[in-house]
Image (cartoon, rainbow, N blue to C red; front, side):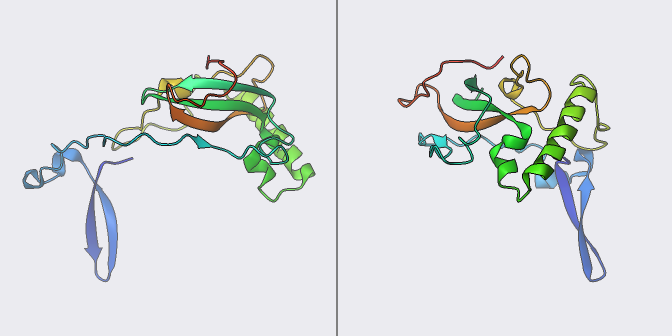
Amino acid sequence: MPEYYRLDADGKKTQWSVVSPKDVPLELSLTQYRFETPKEKPQEPRTTPDDPASCWKKPGPAAGPLQAHLGDGSVVTYYWYRFADQPAMLNADLTPKEREVVQKRVEMLHRAWPKDRNYLAPPDVGTLASLDPALILTPPRGMEAGYVPVATRQELAGAASRPHDQGKAR
């Protein structure tokens, strides 16, 4: 995403336009400004519903729980779900037959699109967002096509309440 914009007026219509960093007026000091990460109070873990009858448990995950230790000091607990059985798909107002059609398409995509290929042209302006490397997950054997990781909990590392599994991301 571009980093700098200017609000331009064209008659009655206004529109945001991308501005190159070298074209940002120096007197604004925007290119020198750095946003510091605010210090926050410890937060309670973020969790998903634990009701055995919920979409998180029924039909439920195919593998997990596993954990990824992030660079911000938090731990994410996640499970591998069959794509059509993940909670978002179960709540997408699709029939079971429609979900199975999507499942087959996702399996085809996973098999046809290797992870070491670029699928979008690099941006002309701005820089790409970066991801914490711990969020790049490898599926368990046999779940390379048609399965996705779904986060169910995030908490500060060392928090008192831990999931019962001590698995790690690969």
